[in-house]
Length: 112
Image (cartoon, rainbow, N blue to C red):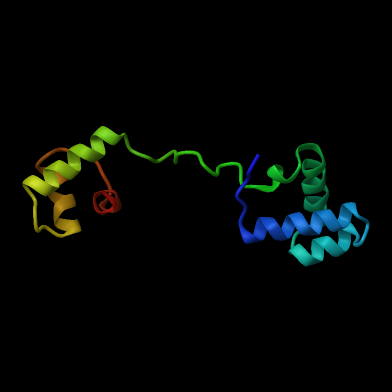
């Protein structure tokens, strides 16, 4: 299984592998990674049980909890492109909330 990892996660992986190979101690690893020894033990236990994939962030590849439904997003974009063409993000947001009754943040209106 292919797992994409950040640089921070790759560094953790190499340090944990050095612990497993008994090249460094847990205390030294904690200092290298700037985390506590307790966190090192927790990561090491997880690494031994699940392998390198255990170190990748668990939320990677999943949709955001804050994501709006696609039909709502498309509806807003259609209104902006048809009726509010040329409006800036703040004014478009104001019109969408007051005239059309949408309850969105300015960032949502811009992100479209």
